[in-house]
Image (cartoon, rainbow, N blue to C red; front, side):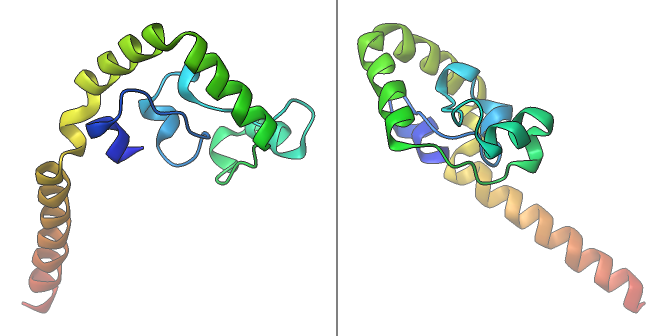
Length: 112
């Protein structure tokens, strides 16, 4: 998904990780209603960390995106413009450096 925000015209994914926080429902392929995973996902979206989606369900989502490609691409472009800067290689690297720096600074202050 992160690479897709930089390079793709449209991304479809299951609702794992931070996908729900970044992508609109249109780009999320949910498990089929009535499945155990769907029930967990509905009751606690964060509890369903790895969502099992059938190939048939994913294929249906792909067909919907294909049939309405211009709308999907336009909406995805807006999402990229809103979130894309957070996921450039530069931004990700700077985030890691900041985390490591805060850990090291915390360790240094405890040792003093």
